[in-house]
Length: 552
Image (cartoon, rainbow, N blue to C red; front, side, top):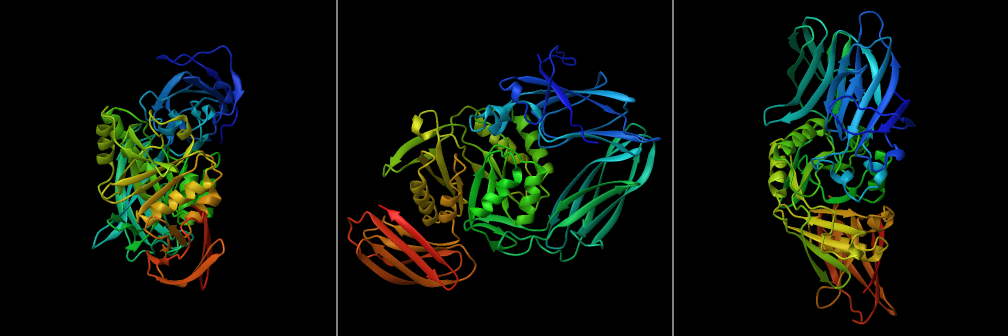
């Protein structure tokens, strides 16, 4: 049973249940009335959903950021990671009052929600992803955490099952693994479980499978997925996963041993999490980095289905943070999203807010991460070392341009190029409308052969610009050499052969080019006058035509 009808009030945080005289009907996911409030209490009523000897399971999703929960005046629990659900078994009355107090984060783990990059409306403490209460049997599975495991000898899934026993329990949890959409199981096993009445226990099991169908990124193969099912009596819980290997080295990212050029789109929280994946596909991106936040399950479901890779930020704000809290958040995050086949890497912000700012060609600013010595590095290290040993963990800079940046740089495109040795280049293009400069900056990063390139457009209206600059096969003007030249970039696994036509005023020419897989090649120099302000390039192959007009 979904809980839809809520009232809310701004409250003063205290030790006991919050009290208020003035309650307003609200949507707890987006309560506009409480913009700027530090603590908001939410109240709803519901009838007992049970029949016979059943129990009731209360689930609250997206509790932001620190929450405490009471049912009929009795305290039932607290929660402080909005990207995992709060679940507890309760014994409701015939009619019930549920009270939830949500407080703004006080420990810098609000991530992007505690910055000016999102609206004040999105910062209000609340119940962002829904609430429900349902009848369940005496023994109920409250959590299923899965993670694929692969060695030279064996491929399988490790499953951790949490069980809440309403009465003495001596039984078995049945684990199964089957291809999504198929009828038969690929693997089966059982795990014994014993618990006393009122006890919550955890059991673990492993499912092994021979030659599983692999999950592949978009454009490289099918997105094969598997359903893991844990069943205890009449109650079950499921999780979706996929088998793939991910490596990151000098040549960049590879999935299942196949190189995948990273053309990444950095995203902020969206009204519809799946729209982010649609925009990434439209922009020719191969990866999405949710900046400073953890999207809902619908985002990952869409990414898994589309073959879109994800670089998941550990949600941290700039500055010094509690090291133990960093470890806990990182471990919880790994358990929440680690089973997703689309997850390529975790990102840990390590630069706090310090940058050196220089100017290059007066077109864009190049910023170098410096760190500010206030303890941010220690927190980043704690988070990084708490993630799984086999996970790819990258040190990433923030989107802010530094305290010393001028006002023009506050609203700006932010473009990053990363190499496996942790060196990186940053271009910041002031003004969200500077699409031409942003495209040039993206192309410059691609020409530099950085294996990991990400783009952030604050206007969210520059998809056409990103789409053009992120073409898997494209032609780019390189005017850093003595003579301007045309370079063809090939991000595909196939050799590309074609012709490059160029035009500069009344001058024109034609160049032949062959480019190997995942590489770039100079088609040739352009015999054009050096004072030409506009040069148009067109690449024609058997299956595509790409145009690129450049202002110098």
